[in-house]
Length: 130
Image (spheres, helix red, strand yellow):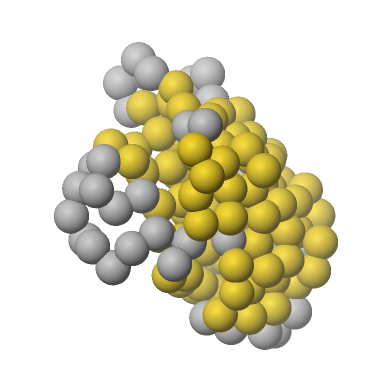
């Protein structure tokens, strides 16, 4: 895929250097996007990922139900989730979705798996050709 995926992650500018897009119509979250900032697969890699419960335009809220979006921020090998963890929140807005292009915005407040700390992602956007 080609395109852009910038955001503000935990108060710092972030932009995907690499983007992965998957569409699998037979799974509960058929549309999955992950962007990461470097080819380094070590603990310093920063990434943002999201999965949608359907393949269409519109607004998707993060929650733990099957009909909701799931978002993830990874910083220094640790994850903050919006969707499956209590106290998290977020939305993804898909304005354009075709067989070869996805455009939209996202923001979320993620909570680590233990429920102890939070991180925010704001000003998220994507325009991806695949």
